[in-house]
Image (cartoon, rainbow, N blue to C red):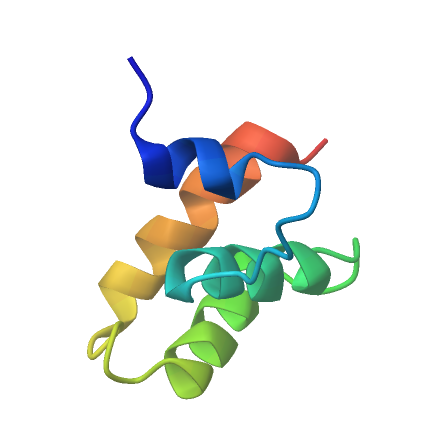
Length: 72
């Protein structure tokens, strides 16, 4: 059963805005241009979202997971 908020967010007149997780995913996906290695993307992610990724390993995990899921 969907809540009223879920129904509202799925309506044709709703103007959605990405939350932080969506912004992070978008940043990583845009960086996957076939030129930059995962490590470079992870370092850029850490610089762009330092509070979410205070250490390199967390950023690398996020980029690696998206690469496995979305990239060729």
